[in-house]
Image 1 (cartoon, one colour):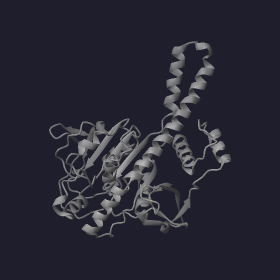
Image 2 (cartoon, one colour):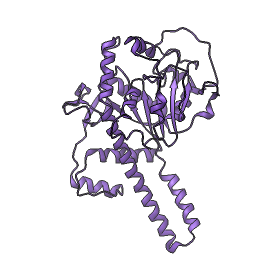
Image 3 (cartoon, rainbow, N blue to C red):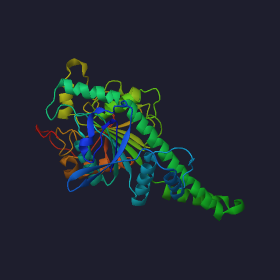
Length: 375
């Protein structure tokens, strides 16, 4: 698994290399590392910053890249080639994952593992300094993480820019290869309709890698602030689906920034009115915290967002991470909705629409119960 971060990263091979502060070069500095689980422990391998000329030429040849091999290239190029090749060969979507408040790197990796196991996707986490204050933390720790989220918005915007660049580069390479194949078969402009049909057929087979974004909890606050950066890339056409789950950001005026985002398919906002973690986040800083987007079923007025209420879905209760908890493993309908969301598909066909309040919900309900099963 590859992980991208703006945290400080020291030398070593364990997850202790990840600090709880931004990179010493500044909060916009990005590092990419490979992390694998070996004997139930995480092994961290640094990605070399600079590729050798020989490595660049080999990547260009193997992946038919239209790049200037005389220029300096970084390890991110090799990682992008590996990820998109894996996704294409295994017919999997890539899910970029932004976590929320009070998550250390081990928390992030466990969540990423669960996402891959539950939904058969390739997960690439973006982790920012969000160590909070432990399992039970107060207002100071919460506000500290909010400040770190704002400070990390530039780094996340740079990360999205790299996703956009490499996806475009690798997609254009595939399209160019297909054009050459079709051109070789139909030389001299013979039978242009058949050539166009073959081109469409080959494109549909080759260019099938879906790239999607999942922002959980305060990760949505980070996303919101990345849209405010002067060189904003995040609002451009980068992802198939953008999924905002249990969003710890204001419901008020959310359409102002959500409607600036372009996607190939859908923007989903998933809401649980009983979310205990969002209730706690609203209480901590007192009156400054408004109703949270991931908990409030009013003012759902974006023109582009598909709102989904899971408050009454079986097993959800007052959970906050219901996309990977037993809410998803025990509720097949809920898991199917998230499965489609994380693979770049539309989900409305699985849901019932309530026009009066502009949201969808699962077709099956349970009686509301008061439980204390926060996850």
